[in-house]
Amino acid sequence: ECLLSHLPSELRFKIFDLLTESIGELRMVSKSWRQLVDNWAAVPVNLPELLQIDMIENEGSSMNVIIDIRKTEKACFGKLRSFVKQLPRESKNQMEESETTNFHQIYRVSIDLSFGSASIDRLSFLISTKCKKVTIAKYHKDKASDDGRHYINYVSDLMKNLKYIDELTYWRHDVNEESANLLRLIRQISIQNVTFSVDVSCTSFTLPMTRDFLLKIRENIEMLNCTFHATATNSNEGSDNVDWVETVLTMFQGSIQSIKMETHYVCLFTPNDVCQIAKALVARGEPFHFKTFLHEKPQPIIVKGNILRKKIAKFSNQWIIDLSSRPPPPRAPLMC
Amino acid sequence: PNVKLVTSDNEEFVVDFRIAKMSVTVSRLMEAMNMSETDDASLLSNSIPLPNVTKAVMARVIEWCEKHKNDEPKEEKENDKRGRTTHVVSDWDKEFLKNDEFGRLCQLMGAANYLEIKGLFNDISQTIANMIHGKKSDEIAEMFNIHCDLTEAEKKEIRKKTAWCED
Image 1 (tube, rainbow over the protein chains, first blue to last red):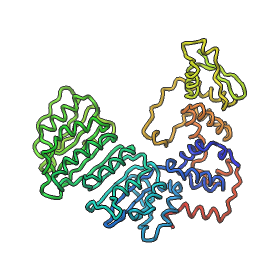
Image 2 (spheres, rainbow over the protein chains, first blue to last red):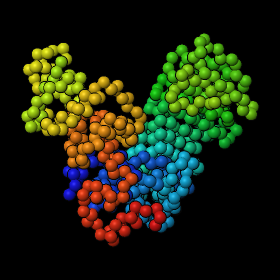
Image 3 (cartoon, each protein chain N blue to C red):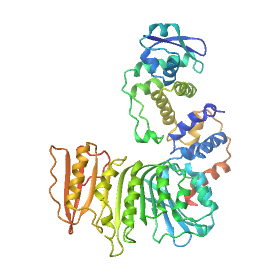
Image 4 (cartoon, rainbow over the protein chains, first blue to last red):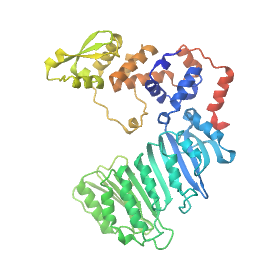
């Protein structure tokens, strides 16, 4: 009927890739065009980038999944729509249209999925392989569900087809043996920026385990933002067991170019430590950005030549230290 | 130095070595046949068969390559790796492609894909996408001379499904 249908599918798919905002109209041209478009949309790698996936563990044995899609591209996700429609009423929290701060009009899907249900696997094939921002959050202590698997296992199941993420936030998790699942997940996805938040007040082993985790996570990400929380008073327990200068320098040997370590609650660095880190990174001659908090007044960092950019600001009774090479790494979140 | 390219309809095109190298497919074939820029004998004694390209299409491809033979190679950006990026078609390229009807554009796109000439392939796909973008379904049908076989009820159902967050 049309030359478009005689094109090899790879060429037709390339054209549809460039027309994600016209997919709704293309489906109404004719029955054969609707079939061509549906064949294209059935392949996750063809689907346009999602704006956001938020996963939050519910108390019990389920998680809430929020998926944000650009309103202009909603017609590309017909199969996702059918999936949501088939879910039991109590699983569908809301489907709404709203404005976001970054000027995209979005459609938001919010659903609850039980751990172990086939819906998690089905959903993994209905989302795109690309997502701007993914958040994996939890508020409760890590506990295996009835089948012996943990929240992060189900998150991994849901994310198994994702290939590209700009920003991954891993929020309020313990670093424990289950973190290996997160590492596996991160290794199979191209991620620019990981924001990692950990409660280090649990045991004296938490900080060494966090160090080990950070050394493993460094391998295939570009930027890391690590916040050390402490909900108990023993927050510095275990910090003496870790050489944080060596840890930071080792982390910069991977693909990471920017590290932000938010240490309001845990004193990890002395002024001398920061000086050592700055001098060692400058000596390597590679682009870097390093930001942290000092609990003592910083000492002068003297480096020859105009090759180190330093910003120091007092924040309450602490000091924010923001150091980078000149020029800094391209996407580093520098302090102004 | 020149390279001989032979199309599916047995037409021989003699092109500059630089132009031949713009096609990844031709480059690979030359390498396999031990044809090198510094070895005139190897270039004279061999020709590259291109069974998937006709004479008329090849002439258009060569015209595009002549114009772009001195272009700087483009760096692959992060978005390119993700496989989705809007390509800006230059004014010369717009002019070059503007009189090609859809059928001819498809043939040219197939040739650019087979020959692996990324710049031409991107120009054509973006040109086709630009022809369709922003148009209503009946305008697209008219543009491609397609009879719409969907009933009003079917269209209504598709519209309803497309507006899926409102139901």
